[in-house]
Image (cartoon, rainbow, N blue to C red; front, side):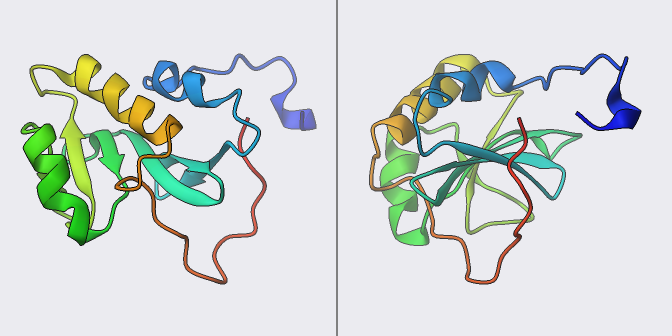
Length: 130
C-alpha cells in the first residue's frame, strides 16, 4: 500500500462480483486499461469490465471477429461495441445482464476458444491491480 493510500477506503468496482470467480485461477491478472478493469487468463485478454457511461457501462468480450457470429447466436443481447467493434459488448441495460455476464465469465474460466485475444507485443508493463 502506498503512503497516500493509508486510511483511504477502497471503493469496490461495480462489476467486481463478476471477476471474483476468476481470481482463484493462478494465471488470473487484473489490470487497468482505458478506464476499464481488464481480466487476463493464461496471458490472454478475456473480458473488460467498464463502469463508465454508455457505451462504456458493461462487459466487453475480447474476441476475434471470426467468433462474433457464434457468440451472437448464443447471446443475442451482445452487440459489436460502437467504439471497439472488434469486440462484443454486453450493456448493463440488457434485460439479462447478470445472467449473461455470469455465463460469459464461466466460458472464459473454461477457456472457451471464442473468448480471449493475445495482447500485442510491447504492451503495458504495469503491475496487476489487486
